[in-house]
Amino acid sequence: MLSVLFAVIALLYATVGQAGGTAFLALMAFASFPPSAMRPTALLLNIVAAAYSTWVFNRGRLVDWGKLRPLLAASLPAALVGGFIVLDAHLYKAVTGIVLLLAAAILALGRVREGGQDRPMPLRGAFAAGAAVGLVSGLTGVGGGIFLAPILIALRWASPKQTAALSAPFILANSVLGLLGATYAGQVPAEQTWLYALAALTGAMLGTLIGLRWLSEAMTRYALAAILGMAGLQLLLLPYLRP
Image 1 (spheres, rainbow, N blue to C red):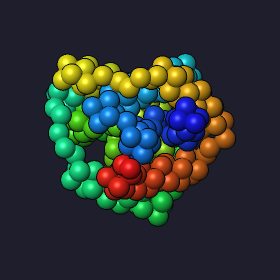
Image 2 (cartoon, rainbow, N blue to C red):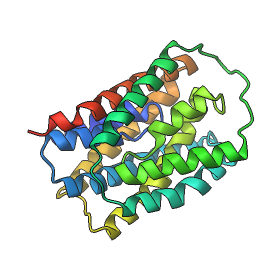
Image 3 (cartoon, rainbow, N blue to C red):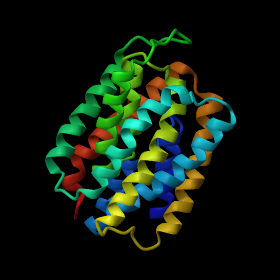
Image 4 (cartoon, rainbow, N blue to C red):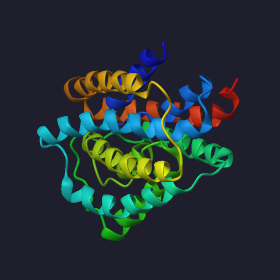
């Protein structure tokens, strides 16, 4: 049953280029996973799901690597540092949950543009956004794409479709560094993670296909708003999900 749920999460999140880290954490909390195993397990599942999405987006030449490079240059070392740190994140989850709900509202209520012109991404802005999101990614195990996406769309640095293509490799790279840091800190994935990883890969394959073939720019934006809303609620409710 857990494997099926991991697959469903990966499917839903992959439709908008996300991996599902927040929902993975919520599910593991509900299933009473050891706290020390939750972050590395979520990061590993992020890697599996985002690796497939990245491969598909890159094969279709949808990833703007010019935009992605400065974001990764700042986020990767920050994600590694965040992975080294083990902290009690109850306050973080509450604040972040509220931020994600606000981001979801902005995306859902904002004006949807189909194929509009993007603004140039300033180098300083890219470094600042990348470093902040990378640190959060390493600290929590959520991958970072769930925070990067609303920034790119709200600032008009990328369209919803472009954002999905940028989010997948961003999540992949930051999750790898975050997992290295978490492993160094003594945290290891849960038992049977290989089975959960296979389920996440299956879900990611289906979700990426749905996102590419059937979601328009407007639908992608609204789907992302729904994902952000669910992630925000999960973070706010996560402390109460532990039996």
